[in-house]
Amino acid sequence: MGVEIKETPVSEAEFDEMKRFVYEYLDASVQNEEEGGRMRWYPWHSAEYRFNHTLNVLSLAEEIARKEGADVDVVRVAALFHDVAKLDADQEVHAEEGARVAREYLGSRGSFPTSFIDRVCRAIDAHTHSGDIAELSLEGRCLIEADLLDKVGANGTVLMLLRMGYEARTHMDSATMIDRVYERGQEACERIQSPTAETIAHERLKRVRWFCEWLESEVPEMERGPEALE
Image (cartoon, rainbow, N blue to C red; front, side):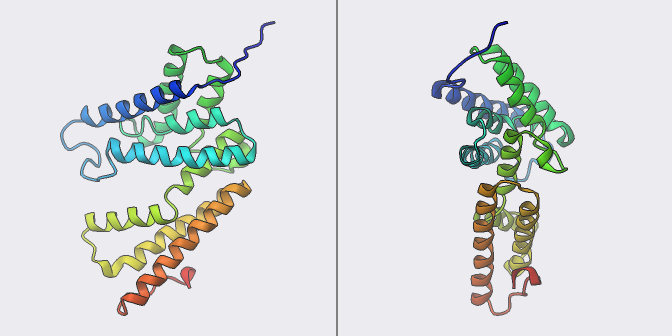
């Protein structure tokens, strides 16, 4: 019985090519929309924003995978493709569609082992799993934890403030809106499993808390946030 062996499943050149493919796929998804497509007016409904989110998740997932002993190659590729279908598929099935795109890509380029492709696609398909992530593979857990963490901390705070502008809110609502970032971070802490992700989450939560405290100290009339930040 043959055994599939490839010491380095993904070379840097292959990974760079995957990055180009993912960005071009996202860009084509937006360009092919009918005028005024779904959330087209939101700045994060763009290839640039979605690809930046993907790279953030990739960095976080790789760090978690290395420290937790997961297969880093599986996690890196899964992170890169996890939202590839986010802009052209219904949200309920974008993970499934992303796994399909990844399988077609990996199966048609290079000589990736079938077992490797299967593990990558399972992680992508499971990244919207809403239950206990302990039920998933270690690689799937790394991806979900990274996806949760991207919108926590300074990055999540900036995105929330950007959203305020598009909702015609004034800066006096900032503390209340930032509270939502903090609450999202707390919810993420309840779901994540690995010590590495927990450390990252708590560090990012501290940044949100500090920012809100600085803001309130400089704007006396700022409405106080909920007790969670006090």
